Length: 242
Image (cartoon, rainbow, N blue to C red; front, side, top):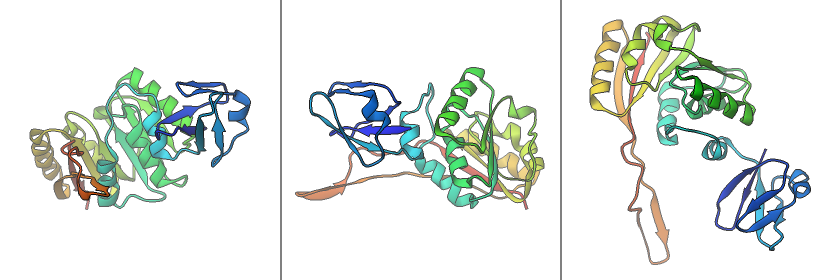
């Protein structure tokens, strides 16, 4: 898998076949023989840099028919749950697979991620995306997690669902002692209900966070915050099994 980057910093995911863009054509043999760091030229003389994609590059360009959770929120989940190499994760509400793929990238080959998606069409897209990036430690299941979690001794159960509280009891049963449940929800009413039910079923350290990211614009004439920012996306609710 390769990514080509043009002079506008626009990225293209390419296969070993002839590549066409508004900057011209690159021959298939040039692409197949290229490696990261090379510069390829189109028939119009335009240059494209060759790079090997990391998880963020791949997710930016992969197939999807739904919105995805942004890196700022996924990073909060990883940091606040202590997710790392060798951890076992169950994710629900797969969508295109972006969140589950981030988790699989973090836990490494010694860890595992199983992602539940109730919609068959989304599950098929996610499976193709996972296969395309070559992740061997991530399984996508087409199923309803509210009916139960088959996996056990989990380090994290992550829920991107409209009613995450419907999984609270199943999460408590499937987590190891010290493991976390976490949910991403866009509305306050959702985390209010979820927090109350987490406490009711026995979770400790229940808390709700919001992550807002603002980039800084650095120019010769002065430095200031960008006028556009990744403000509210969703609330993150955490509970721990102790």
